[in-house]
Length: 70
Image (cartoon, one colour):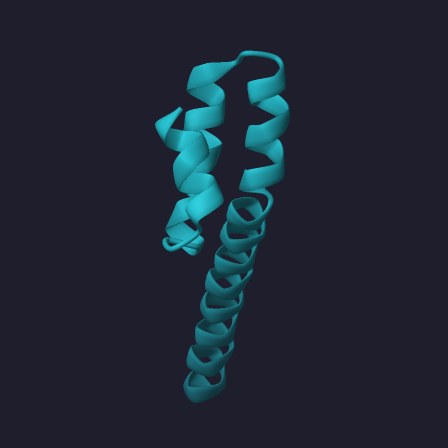
């Protein structure tokens, strides 16, 4: 009985962690498009934050680095 409870608890924790990781990756993936829209409205700090999120997932993206430098 205890073994089942431990396994069920472990599955719940792992599921929560997996879902959290998936949400973080999806948020970072949309960062470039969001940043371009924010830059069009001249919202510099918010665009910088979204580009930083995107570059966390895609560190070698030259276009995102140029946008961040501007």
